Structures are given as C-alpha cells and as structure tokens.
Amino acid sequence: MNLTQVWAVLRKEWWHIARDRRTFVLVALSPVLFLVVMAYSFAVEVRDVDLAVMDLDSSAASRSYVATLTDSGDLRECCRTDQYADVEGWLVDGKAKAAVVIPPGFADAVEGGGRPSVQVIVDGTDPNTAEHAMSHILSRTEAWGARRLASAIGLGDLPAAPIDLRVRTLYNPSLEYIIGIVPALIAVVLSLPAMAASLAITREKEWGTLEGLIATPIGRVELLLGKLLPYEVTGMLSVVLCAAVAVWWFGVPMRGSVWLYLALSAIYLLAALSLGLLISVLVPTQQAAMLVAFLVFLFPGFFLSGIFIPLAAMGELRYEALMFPTTHYVLINRGLFLKGAGLDALWPWATALVLFAVAEFAAALFFFRKHL
Image (cartoon, rainbow, N blue to C red):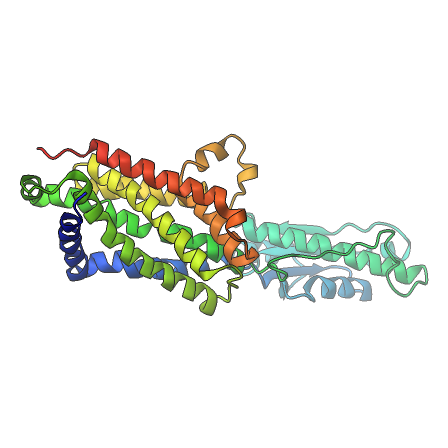
C-alpha cells in the first residue's frame, strides 16, 4: 500500500467535505442536532392527563377518592359534571383524556363493607396516554382502598407487609427515561456520517470524475482508504460533540473511560463507514445510495438495535439484529456511560465491530474494479 497515494485521495475527499457545506453539516454537525431532537422526542413523560369527573354521590368518601386520584400530578381534574353527554363531548373534543363516573350510593357501599363500582372511560385514540391513565387510576384506587381499610379496622395506617421488600435500582436510580435512551441514540445518529460516505464513489460515477481516478496509478486499497478516512476524522468530531451534549446538556453520567469510549467509537465508525462505502461501490447513483443507506442504517438502528425493544424479547429476530453494527454500539454505549464497564466486559461487542469493519471493507474492495 502506497501511503502517498492514500494521502492524495484523502486530501481530495477532505477538500470536498470542507468546501461542500451540506456534506460537512451532514457528517460533523447533523448527528448532534439529531441527538437533541430525538432525545426530546422520545423522552417525553406522560403527566397531567386531563381527567373529567362525574360524581353522582357527592359525599366525603367520593371527594376523598377523587383527591387521591389527582394528588400525584399524573392526573389532573379538568372538569366536573353530572351528565354523560358532557363527558362524551369532552372526550370527543379532546378536553379530557379520561373520565371517572362515581355512581350514587358510593359512600354507603364503602361504609357498609361492600365493593362500590366506579366506571372509568378512556380515550383510546392515544394508546400511551390511555394506558398511563388506566394504570394510574388502578394504582391510586388500590392505595385509597388500603387506607380506608386500615382506618376502618382501627390501625390508623397501612398494616406492615409480610415481606420487607427493599428495592435498589442501579446505574439510573431515578429511572429517568432520557438518561437511559440518550447513550443508545448516539449510536443511531452516528450513522449519518456513514450515510454521507455512501455517496463517496457514486458521486464520482455521476460527475464523471471516476474515469480520471481509474486512469491514475492509485490502487484500489489506496483509493478506498483515501475515501474513507476523511469521514472517519469528521465523524470523530461528531463523537466528541455527542458525548459532550449527552453529559452536559442531558445530564447523562460518563462512568466509564473517555479514552475507551473514543477508541470504541472510532471502531464503530470504521464499521459503519465501511458499510456505507460498500453501498457506494454497489449502487450506481447518489439518490439510490442514499435510499439504501437510509434503509440499512436508520430502520435497523431504531427497531433492531435494542433501544426500545430488548434483544431478549425479540426471539429469533435478535440474531438478525446482531448483524448490524448499531446493535453492538448501543450495548457498548450503555455499558460505558451508565455502568462504567471496561474492556473486560465490552470486548465481545468491540470484537464484533472489528470483524464488521474488516469484512465490509474487504467486500467493498472485492466488488470495486478500476475499470468502467
């Protein structure tokens, strides 16, 4: 391999990236922008769900029950009525997302030791909000019933549970969703430099400049390496910026080694960029290359990388998920940021990324020919 020839192609590709603002933004800055947008989009917690109340009992017990439903802030009483038509109208126009109907005789049934019926009506057009409202109403109803029972039998407080259950949550004690998802999203947004690399050869094909490169004494290895390395350098800039945003903007802890994070990120970029280069070799046009890269990187990155669905819950599909570099990098990032894991724990995923990088670059080299 002639390093002088690699440097010549590298300079050519670097000047293209530096002079073309769209390419530079796509490779270096867009991952950070996408990280911020997607983190805020996916980390929205459902709170303050508007609850309509139809209290036909109007007793101290029913008022206490409604107060228990809304005391945590997850549900918010937005309106009150004694007509079913009003409840249906509020659900239709979106003023309320759920409704509780307390029938007459609620207090008498509670004081008599019976089981009063309460109707819950939920707007199912938004399943996440509906599920949140139902689970919260159920849990708060159980809590209210337990307190009433303890008061009725003279305990004054809830009886002690038969098991002293003590729960300890590691790595994310507050269970903040954004802390768990941001390290995983870094793996997805860092596929954008690879999408830009998928245009490296197809651009030369469309512009007619590939003929000039073929006529030079530059070898296939030198040409492909010279095309790949500038994206690796600018991609590492994105790696640093994404880590900085994760730590200082979103408050994600970096418990692992920063140098190990940079080294494994460089290997991941090599694997992703080699796959993008392979797409560029096989596909004839820039438009087709971008479409294929979109399907290869973003869709598996979201749905098969374990960000939202654990690999253990995928069944046989998890073997397909492990065929993408993003899946391994998600595991690496969560281990580094949240668990403080070292190379002794992360080496299987790092080894897989090395194998991906070598195999994909070799495939790109095999299919690329210096002739028209």
